[in-house]
Length: 208
Image (cartoon, rainbow, N blue to C red):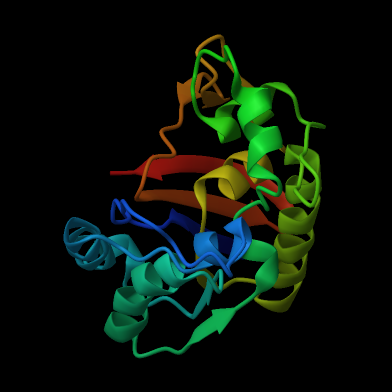
């Protein structure tokens, strides 16, 4: 029985911005348009040169700018188009004031980390960890059926990747994901190799 390999990738580093944003755009629109920093572009190029990402059969990405910018180097090296799917988007933050209230006195200062602990929390117009896990899982079920035995690169976002991995991972006391006693580091960028037999995950490893 042939294995299907999914390379699950968090986008590279984004640029820091200060000042007044377009007041006609809500937090979701602003989030979708975040771009990579110069260092992030370099990270993406270096990531694409990892030998694991040679001879990819298909590439999928979130439609967010930073994800597509990360995927473009892998696409170029493999002479492939980038397929987009909204199920790979970052979880919707929703009302930022509500999110700020939720984060008061939290230790990690990272909403996605805190939502690993409170998987049903969501703001108005936002998504919970569980909402995000379900849509990510639906996407992967579909591509596992469609691309059996293939090597698939998937570029997504920190929160969405973390919540999807809750299907197999535990959360330790440091609010880190753990797979078979190995801590996973879902920083930007990261490369995870997931090996599936049919729909069953048989191995998950972090590629440095």
